[in-house]
Image: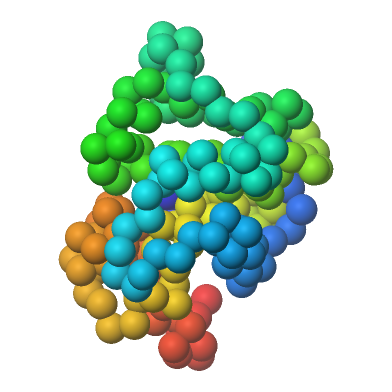
Length: 188
């Protein structure tokens, strides 16, 4: 689930190569081209098909595991060293049925394996900038994969939610991003 992150995070965490929203959006565009994702404007991405294609093209594994194999509040997780994603069976099944949260979870994990398998640094007590935080980056990757900002145009939040099969919160954030690109003076 996409979250609002503070501009700096001070926790025992991991730190990734700094990436701006623009850089992540460019990485998603490259990813879409490499996977030959030619979704039409206003249509939801088949995230399970993308998962299959990406695992073949980018050489990572994924497996659907029994729910009890991952912690209660963990829906999926990526082993960055072995380039492997474990997805709870319930999450995979609900994503196949169109669940917005579960579609986002899988897109988020794809983001980790695409962006973070080369270099992640463990930080203890160090301030991490939002744009260095792997979770923020994977959230932005997932949001851009599911709802390309270039496709939003004048769509309303409800139209984005319905056409792209994302949550209202994701749709609001994407709409805000599209508006900030139209009106750069209002961008933070």
